[in-house]
Length: 513
Image 1 (cartoon, one colour):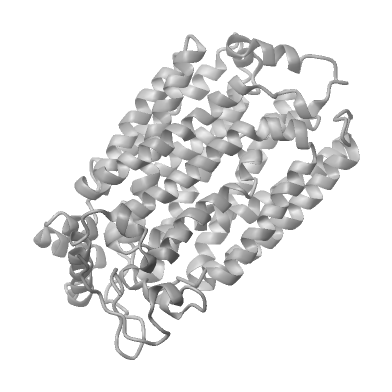
Image 2: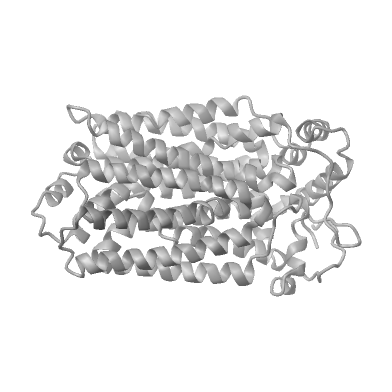
């Protein structure tokens, strides 16, 4: 079976020599800053759209609707196609950009892709901070989206390729951790800039997106490229030297040989997109489509994009809604540390299953709480105590996502692809992630208006489906060297019919033309 799998004849996974080095830790820390730009944008967009001064300038009709009497159906107060286009245009741009980023990542390396993403995001941040009209605002958002598409294409691959197998989960999740840090920072900034006299605080919120962009672009200038990327571009000596450096040992022969074999298989592939569609790569193709799709169907965007808007909808005041978004941001960040601490010990499946069950209960309880107060007419005044219960329920949901589908939705796809299809497959991951992020962001306010509290039941049903998918179709990937990952499909009860290798059989790398 072609692709980066190579095992000993007794079926045991190889344990390559090496250790976690300071060099690898720092490189992964800098690379993971790509998550800051994604997270900051997720947090900032929902916050500024709840600021009166921002709505008055760019979306006056939404502002007028919001200020109607409290008896107005609160499910539908913010239903505006133009407002959701402002939020979701970024993700459509990221979707398209990721396809181009795949070619750049393959031909020029992961580092150059991250650098380009940071620079483009910086330009978008400047345009948004200085926006004079909606057109300028959306052009800036599109540039931000291109930056996000580039970083989401390159960063997870970079982290998985640099990390030693036994710590790959922890290091890769640093990307998701940075996303949560970005969200929290955005929520805090929104909380304080909303208080700025004169109504220009939204400019500060949007303009400060330049800070994570500078961190990412500046850091990328000093990052080394991965041995896998160097080999795929014919730089054998540099690749071996880099492998020695990141593993902290000269005894890298076995791992280097496997990387070379994977690289040769990769070079034999003229069109990785067509190769990805071959039957033997069916498991990877399915995972690259369903994992990012299901990640977005958890309903996390309902909370993280529109948290301030959502809290306003269920009866919080403007400042209180921003403060509640800060609380969920804190929960999101700290819960991610749970995943970092446990993913390489408990494994991916246990976290995904536990998190899925917790999210199911949280969504159905949240939907019921809102149904009891607002019913189908969407008119109610809720007490402070009731509002606190709603926030707690949302925090339970956010914490479950933060240690399961949040980080693992990026980790698992980035570690299961053999080198010959890795860049193309990661683009598929980003495309479907951004496509469903775009769809959910674009239609959420409309869905809230029409489905009302049933929207939370809808997402709960989706989480039931995704938890079943993990249970039956996702094998465990912890501790397996990235170039040996193909072997897990040959042992799986369902996927082995596609890859054609039985459990315990010898699987070798072969070139395919």
